[in-house]
Amino acid sequence: MPDQYVARSPADMPDARTMLGQSGLEFITAIKEGRLPGAPIAGIMGYAMHAVEEGRVSFRGAPAFEHLNPMGGVHGGWYGTLLDSAMGCAVATILPKGKTYSTLEYKINITRALKPGTLIDCTATLQHAGRSTAVAVGEIRGVEDGKLYATGSTTCILMSP
Image (cartoon, rainbow, N blue to C red; front, side, top):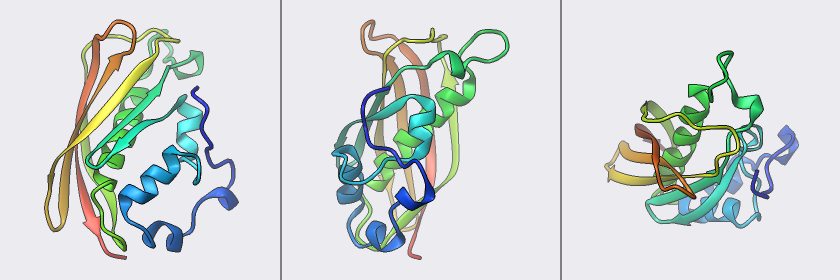
């Protein structure tokens, strides 16, 4: 997994004031730069934030043996978790201070099987941001071969706590 600081216990997680006291772009950038911890799921799943800009986020990583299903293929949940993370973070980058979001639904399409150890980029782009919902799309591509391995889309709810 790429090096990045991820939360290892509840004490490592940022509190609500930290999250809501800055814009979403500031918050996501702080995670990418290692000033705030990334989500624990990133460490478990073997990926880390690779690039951040307003409306666009990329993660880089590789599935491992631990991510295989009983038939020896990379579990569909690995693709889904990675795409959900990237698409949600792309949505987060457009949030003003004091706003948060949650995934309402997401869909993935696996277009080709990944082998463990294949380095990939998962890039998500914001497509729409309204008053109460946002839509983003994402794709997983091999870093070395450029092949498309999966696509996804999400709808997120935008909230004020």
